[in-house]
Image (cartoon, rainbow, N blue to C red; front, side, top):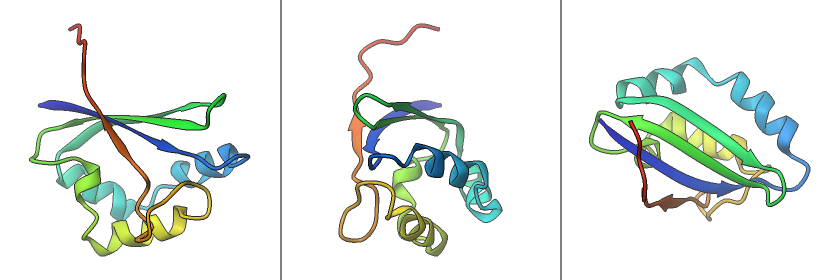
Length: 104
């Protein structure tokens, strides 16, 4: 199992909406993430910079950022595009982070 982390950017004043939408995560998206081998998926917010920090454990080949060709992920991206920084295809501007320390 590998660990992956990445950061994204939330638009100013959108914390509550971001939380609301994730608390009501679509069941079909949840199922897709689980089927792709993604577990222990957490997202943290640095309110000072509006930086979102995401962490996930992955048993498959890729992570959640590799599911962008699926219809449900594209719909989720479009749903989230008004509250976070996105690319022209509505995917979140996402920067993968290098793991530099791990303690078990």
